[in-house]
Length: 284
Image 1 (cartoon, rainbow, N blue to C red):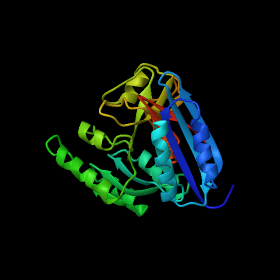
Image 2: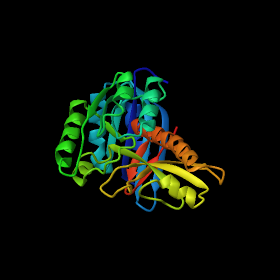
Image 3: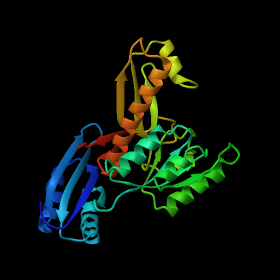
């Protein structure tokens, strides 16, 4: 495996010969050892995507300088992360606590290698749950009139906690276009998915009345287009006529937790790369 720290490099660039050779050559010449490598060329977009996990005897700064020097020749955008540094996550939630509880449990038990630095909510309901895990809780009520001020407070908390990622764990407010732009690529949302789709009040009751056979959940990056950001992960469960609306809601909560947890894990492990309106995901 090699000595030294462990790093993850992700990159995207125009698809052309020699990218893999250039990256692997740079690492080899600096005494690094590749332990995992995945790549994908998107013929429609003409883009190449790559994720490389490697050990290195060199410090973070030296490696960043080396890749920054290589980037112009390849037209390359890249990110480099020291895996010893746990990503810092700020969670936003309203009154439904299942996704928050799941993320807190997975983090405490080591299933998610992240640090949940704070929870922000427009309601006070989930303060006891959050504080039982020793996590700061910030109650920031919001109305149409106070939304700009409330979102400014959210941004201030993101900066204060040096959050790398914001997770909307059933946060039932629409983020403004301005906030979506400022946090672009660093906000993940979860919402229910039905075939057919049901919106508005009591979606599980609507689904039950139509006799749906599949329910599910979609985790995606947040954009100004409501619930239409690039999809990271989806989960489904089969249901039938014996399930009540309450059964559907319970099953829905489970699949929401599963999809969101995988999306958060893959994002924080740098396994997700944006490809226009889509994502390239390199799962373990």
